[in-house]
Image (cartoon, rainbow, N blue to C red; front, side, top):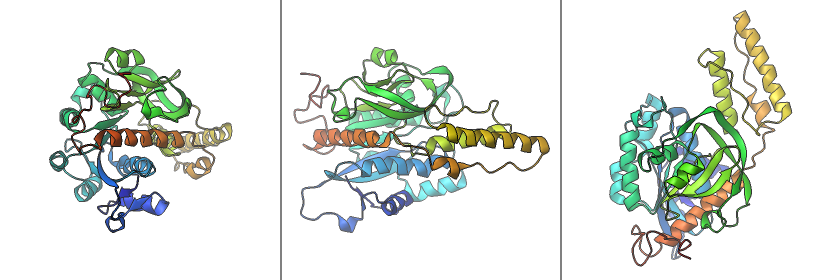
Length: 358
């Protein structure tokens, strides 16, 4: 599914240079029955992760099966505080929600976000995010919710607030497919890895109590993939299948440096099932050097990112690509009759994929 670079968003230009199928408007196939479909990306990530998040999700979309051409429409919420650089990026490349709402979308992706406390209803994005979700429920074929967005919707739409865990759930974890008949997991390994990075959890029991369908679960970290009762309108991720190979390493680097600067109470543990013993030894040696530098009042040693990153294995991307490709296929199947009227023309709104009425 090639993405059409209908603007000069740097993420699209970088993905094109890296080999992802990104076509220019002039390169669109002529006289072929290839539909254009429009996907929104509500990017709520903090400034430092804003552009990386664009690339991660756009890459997954662009590497899906070539049954259509996709236009991606990034937007954000004005209520989220931004620095000068990020604000300029958003002003130049992002679209206002009013324009998105007026022109419509075929699908929507909503990212996670940084929060300042446990009660999501007190976050500045709470009310505007609720407005986007309410609009999407009635007007968008399918919305994919990532991590904190999943927690927010489970809270304000289903009355199932997330629960703080004793420790941070982060690392790369094995998961098992529970509902093998669902098209989202068609031709996907029945057991596969997914990265997680979160302090809070919505349990399988909570998803089921809300009348939702759990498709993929982990014995260690719980639910990864679930859907709304109809199987498609809302798709919930608790994990981060979009992560790059070194995303968890960068998170560890951030937290380790914050600890060294006295801004975190505890030295962060290594992400589970992510670093081999040799790479852990490199980081332990670096931590020792950091401790000595702090005692001596000298500059902190450089974080050995390149040395560690070269030996990290990615065990999740192929499956993530397959699931996103399936999601695109489901969306295409439901919307092909009449664009942006996905639940009309004889499509059962309670089972648009025709799998739960069988």
